[in-house]
Length: 260
Length: 221
Ligand SMILES: Nc1ncnc2c1ncn2[C@@H]1O[C@H](COP(=O)(O)OP(=O)(O)OP(=O)(O)O)[C@@H](O)[C@H]1O
Ligand SMILES: [Mg+2]
Image (tube, rainbow over all chains, first blue to last red; front, top):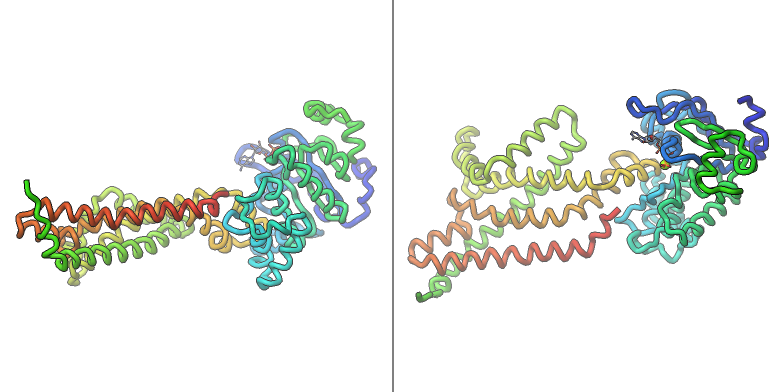
């Protein structure tokens, strides 16, 4: 694919490139989980990664913040290749927020302490400053009143919103979401998607792995369709959902019952 | 058959000193084996590669050798090898600690390994270092999860102190044997000893269980 073909219909493509993937290869032993991923994420964009189970979406997210190392290609974050050194990698991670399918709140800490943990331990803020920031972030996700609660006393949707607040408290430049609503009851999915929509509206750069096609269609600026470790098609949502150019994309969407 | 429990009341201070020694030995060996076990587990989990086979050998051998043999060896053989003299109490403390620390280490290791990897991943994603993650995220949860097993280990510790009677530590069992022999009233004396052990252990196991039920959610990720 040439440059103009991959970028047409991309309204925010003029901005700075926050993440640039070039020929990214990831192997687990003999198994190749990613076979040459090319993708750009620009400032303020919401890039949605969709595709069947096992196609490598989570793997790409984990490579993005160095939770997994790559065997080939490059990942650049804000113009610099991801460092290999553990200490430098930690500095990069503080600028990327990550939200997991299974929330992964720390069960021994209150909601407030969960959100304050990063600023306190990693950014070395004073307790008062860390708590102030944490309170503000909990308020932002609509959970100011849940500050003293432990995760065990929160619903799934509330836990995921606290997890989003925990990532935001680091004031990241980009947010990585790995199927943030897949473990939720249908009635609480909306509250999490609303928070994500609000973030997108505020101009947060986001990479979102999701099976919520309605969200990807409405909030996504750019959609990448994964299959077997490759991006089989990428483009603006109108193209992917209304006029997919590959058989793979059509198969995947019809499999989900997507009718447009 | 007539029972005469005056043998107990007449020798309360004699038996009481045995109870005191049992409690002291329990508390001391319980504490030292916990601390030692903690470090052994840290070595096994995070230590240098060359150290791990040694740690595993230690743990496996302690699980294979009866605590009675360890105590007797510590009291009769160790002083000769090391060229030191050792009181029976000291030998019992060392022997029990060496034995129980292996079990404590396995409890700590199982606790740490039971914390889901997603927790470490979330902490890594925040930018935390490995050491910070162990200290602030994994260990606190693991400690909560270890509580029931530590409760059992503590009761095993109290019970195992009775074995120290064979190397002449003047704890409850030893004092009871002496008194039973002198008074020819083994039924009364040994029944009393059983009752005392039960009264020491019951609140410990119950207390740990109740405490665990209150804090279990703090370790549930
Ligand atoms: N640690 C690992 N070791 C070995 N194989 C792995 C590992 N992690 C992922 N894989 C494999 O890599 C492939 C891609 O996995 P990945 O989790 O990225 O898929 P995914 O697109 O996120 O799927 P899903 O929608 O189910 O989350 C899968 O076949 C998976 O089995
Ligand atoms: Mg996944």
